[in-house]
Each structure stands twice: as C-alpha cells, then as structure tokens.
Image (cartoon, rainbow, N blue to C red; front, side, top):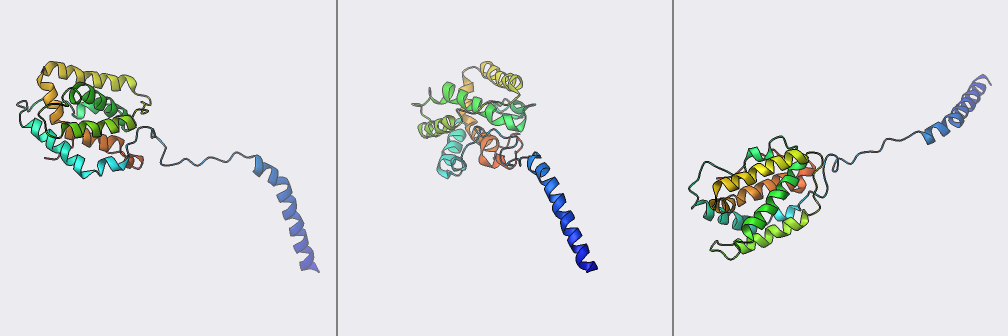
Length: 200
C-alpha cells in the first residue's frame, strides 16, 4: 500500500504541475527559426545557376573579350578592379554589378551591336536576359559608398576617351566572372571575395 500511495501522490503532483504550467507554455513566444538561405541575402539579387553553366555563352564572352583586348594598348588601367568593390559589403556587391552591367549594355554593347566584333549580338542578348532578371535587385544599406565607387568607374571611362569602350568589351570576361561571384545562387551559401579573378 505504501508504494501504491507514493505512486498516486506522484501522479497527482505531476498532473497539477502540467495543469498550471501548460497555459504559460502555450502563450510563451517561440523564437522563429531563421532560414539560413535568406539571412543577409537580398533574394531579388540572384541570378540562376543556368546562366553560368552555359558553356557556349561563356566561350563567346571570353572570345569577345580576348578579341577586344588584343587591340587594347593600355595594360595599366582597368575598369573592373578590386577598387570597384572597396568598402562594399558582399550582400551589396550584386547590386553594384547590376549597375555596371546596365552601364556596359547601354553605353557599350547596344551601340556596338552591329560592329565587327564576333559574337557581340549573341553576348548582348544574353546579358540583357541577366539584366532583366536583376531588375528588382536593390541595395540594402550602402548606397552612398556604392554610388561613389560606381562614379569613379564612370570618371575613369571619361579619362580614357574613346578607347574605353574597347577596354570595356575586353573586360566582359571580368564582368561575367564578377556577376557569377556576386549574384549566383551559390552566394546564398557562401559569399566569394570580389577581387579580380580573371583567368589567363
């Protein structure tokens, strides 16, 4: 009887605790689990992996850049360099590259679409698709720094004179590489450094 009485007392005590504690458990705020894929990432600043898996277009871009670079006598100045990303956080680098892409299309590729460069029409159409996919991409918090860096790039184009368009075409491979490192889906998992990564 003693053992049975102890068991009954424990059972009653357990139910009393549950009865009094349950309301508090129900009204306590439960921390929401953050989705690791969206923390610190602007979901509108993402380009589908398929763009960068397109080996034909990657080859066209590289060939076009190589053709333009062969006639570029200026080996000192570069439009897309590590200075472009100075003090710009990884989460805003895609927005910055969107601005560079728009500038390159509007000021270089579209006016040159009927030029002697091989593949320029195919490359232009391909980059326009990427441009459309990034239309909703916005900066998060660094607009003054981004605008300052972008303005320096435009100032450099003015300093170079007419030759800057040829240089910009010669750096299309860099543009594509930085779009990949700044805007591709892999950036959801890990941001890559934005320094110059041209493969010779």
